[in-house]
Length: 328
Image 1 (cartoon, rainbow, N blue to C red):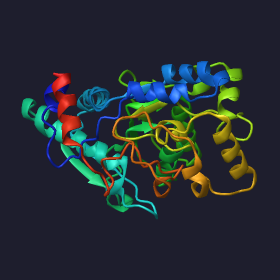
Image 2 (image 1 turned 60 degrees about the horizontal axis):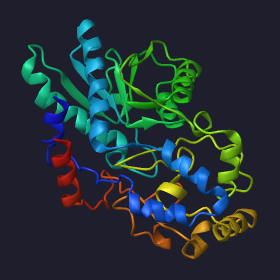
Image 3 (image 1 turned 135 degrees about the vertical axis):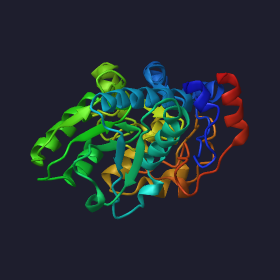
């Protein structure tokens, strides 16, 4: 069922480009690393989890299926999704809306036609328009620290409602923080997660020895300590520097002395790295992510891989078409 959907994505849903690792470029990147760090840099690449679009959708729809089974048992046939706006960006340009569009299409094409009682789908960004007697679904692609979802939870402070978290890729820390946010905001009701269908993301300190982490990330920070991000990325995005490693995945900055000195100088002198970005040695080893210039650099909003839900997205049809053929 998942393969059938993936090969027939509705045209109104933007598809990400293929951003798997280009092995030849990755080898060049490793070759230019300082000799004393090459082995550790290789280990980082080895533990990095790449989530293709196909894998992402498969995990997403497994999560949806589990949620729907729970809804059926409770005789609920209305799926009420809440998408929160913030001050700097409309929700239609966020991952949550993109994810919900996939869920909506999946249910309309591959769930509702085969069941007697159809699911009705509501997408709402104004909390005043929500029916608090029906569970509220907060959906997204991934949650690393849980901070963003916790902000959405705050919108329901002191209200009576049930909230279902539908996020196929999530960390243990995020689950803990979301539960804490629910309690601290004194919401009268329950908060629910899938119990089976989800992928637990692991932070780097659970995958690599601390001594190695410090040695590697001294090239990208002042002292290489307090590195708790996640070595994972998707076809549709690399998370920001609070959650992942865009300096490496998005921008291909090589761990060598030259780059280390530039980054250290910028950090100690409080100079934006963007000012000296073009001086850095870089080899971007993700496919379809090579057109990096200084104007593209934003550590908190990595431009590459291009996010398909952003207005500046450019779709590489050839790359995607090949990927689907290989998948079949």
